[in-house]
Image (tube, rainbow, N blue to C red):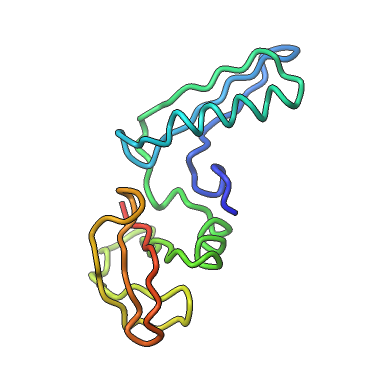
Length: 140
């Protein structure tokens, strides 16, 4: 559905020689429990492509931000029923808007059910209009 590149987690991928690749990833937050699974999946995919020497390194600086999610990633999140984070303006003040658009029907009439959802980087919300629950990727 959404790739690590779409989410802005994949920071760098470099080839250093025949079959030698170095990958850098930045988790959505420092204690993200998915880092090991992401690293393992990257290694498995690159080994399957015939690259025997794969190193995946976690880098924490610069810190990941929801601004790192690509437009394609935001589109894919919404299509799969996860409200993407609201984009932040490039300059100027950050508008204080509490409305989160429902990824199912587009309504701005949504309510917070829980500050945390399936992962700490998402909140659980429900649409007042269509009554469907959905995850909202929090802005960071």
